[in-house]
Image 1 (cartoon, rainbow, N blue to C red):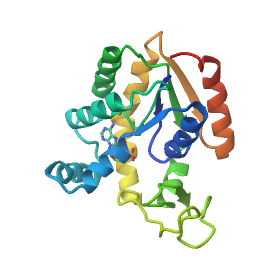
Image 2 (image 1 turned 45 degrees about the vertical axis):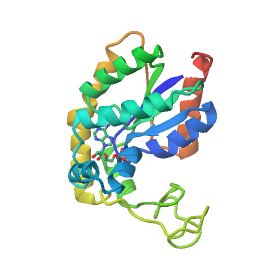
Image 3 (image 1 turned 120 degrees about the vertical axis):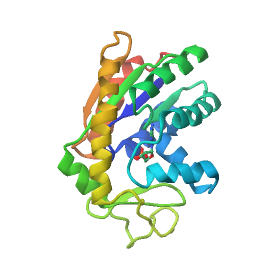
Length: 221
Ligand code: AMP
């Protein structure tokens, strides 16, 4: 099963992705995480990525497509792939189609999580995560048990550089302008299932709706 998980920044893609990966045994490929890891490497490419990522802009298509193509080919396990944050432009979606066609494994479904902008801003500004194990918290709605420390591994929680109110506005604008057309691209194709999920509910409800929508076709490969 190959799934693309879409939604504006802060709709809960990361959290829901971990749950889908567990439910269906998929390999999770988050373009944001992959790019952040490259950026942290401090290479020439890393510095270039920082220029875009630290200002809330999308990284150019050719760079992202190359990095993701490598990850997709490497993670092309039998159980399937969950792509999270990629594709973010129509050009990336077209490139992904070519890559998956080469692997002989087309997309099964595109899941879009929607949340109103006001709720997104609240969520992102309160978001903290563990730099070691990746667990995500929210200072208001999902605080850690001990102040600023990860429940799972005791590491001090950090805030993403781009999780400021100003950059959230920039990232939302990029989503509307560059990524919403990708939804139209997928909707126009009769053989791709597009599933829209209301993400402005309790985490467990969102997960349950999503897994139920995907389960009937779980046996596809
Ligand atoms: P995310 O963690 O998905 O919010 O991504 C963080 C940042 O990484 C974004 O604001 C972009 O700068 C960059 N990024 C992640 N995925 C993509 C993509 N598919 N295309 C272009 N830029 C991306």
